[in-house]
Length: 181
Image 1 (cartoon, helix red, strand yellow):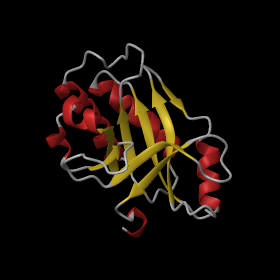
Image 2 (tube, rainbow, N blue to C red):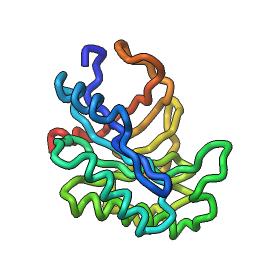
Image 3 (spheres, rainbow, N blue to C red):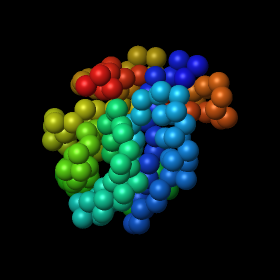
Image 4 (tube, rainbow, N blue to C red):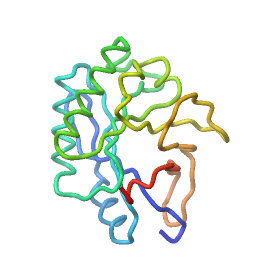
């Protein structure tokens, strides 16, 4: 908070056939809230079917249930660098169906959904037009992003430094003050 951080997107959970709670989620949530930092969350997914995505959404919900979020709950599906990902062979339509299954389930639980992705992912790996009802959280490490469509949040670095945090952190700019909604 003293470093000027106004909001934080916290990883709540991740899935890889089964789902797991981020071991730092409760600590990060509690401490952000105590100092007045608005929070959102994201689930890192490797679901290969809409049914798996719904199970992951239900697990994510079990982690975030009862907590107050000023920012959306984002769905993050991406390839693993230097590895054969479970999602490597999925079509654009399949990846989109999976993401929408997760987002729909999270919204049914009363939360605002958001889709996360880098420029290539959003433009080439999913059917972007099918996410028209969701805000986009763009990950593009650049001085000026060249993503050609509207996005509500921008992750501009994965090597940010914030006083009081050991190691690098992702830094983001939100163009919407979700906490004022």
